[in-house]
Picture 1: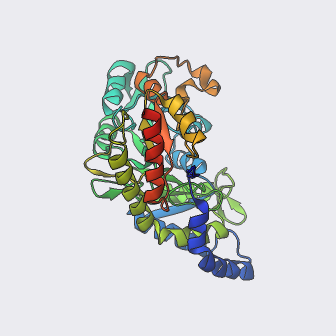
Picture 2: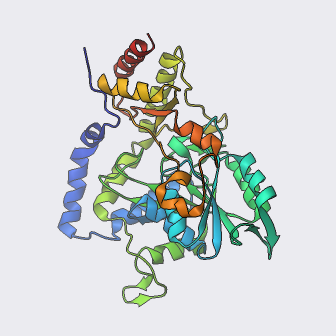
Picture 3: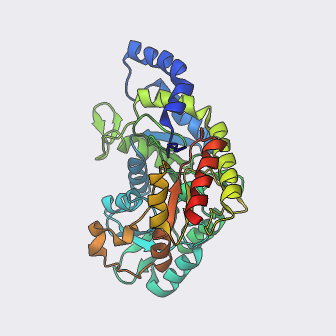
Length: 384
């Protein structure tokens, strides 16, 4: 019998917290303290402690978290930042919005994260040293930073990234939009670079009912700048020490995030169990299943497989009630908006190959084994 298996089950998450949620929201509505209030401040502290960082700065989206973190570290006009092309477009967008140049690097085919060997190859062939910074030969811009993206919940090898950053004088901004609770070498995502940026978009492992984000750092100076930037550069209500932005995490979303944070470890463990069951059920088919680092904890924001018959499989699964997606079919370096950067087809061959084969299957904390059993049967029919 045909079933419908959702990609994400937001209603089950809501049902788990709704009684407590409305009690806490009533307190907010009674006080009408809607911005920069006690729930936001408590959540900033709780999430920073959970992630192993000293400071948390709540903002209104993951994109804002990336952008404001870059600005807080002094990255902007005349600078360049290394970043994988294989990521959601916001990663690249944030770099461009600071006035910096994104230099896009190919990925490791095994885990879809930025290739350390390709970073080293880039510095060897495309840069020169000047005034303590490496300079991109083509643009003449100083290479000031690197953004490792913990894609799909799978952590980047941060030991090697930190070695590269030390060698080439780079600031590290971890893009943790899909990696709440992921770990590498026992450290949580967002605590290993100079700054970390998270999204709380409604489908994330830790999600708001809408949008939200947070910046993490151990650097008190960066934290102070980020706090000012998120609220028009203010040091107090009518004193603007810098030109800033309007980017605050509101109290209603902070309440939701505090309640969900209490459940995040259990929900991530449910995702890991679902991924293990997927891997066991689907191993008989001609698919490439997700790989994780031996030193890392993958939290499976997305469960992404690869198939040479991706498009046919996508169609067949949808026809049989299985919601599927493609994250991401067009790499950032080939997006029309970035034509001016001069990347062409073939510029990043591994990224381009993978983008034609990836397929995202349903994954959420309330996914049942019988749901995966049904998906297995659909695969079985497809492969005959």
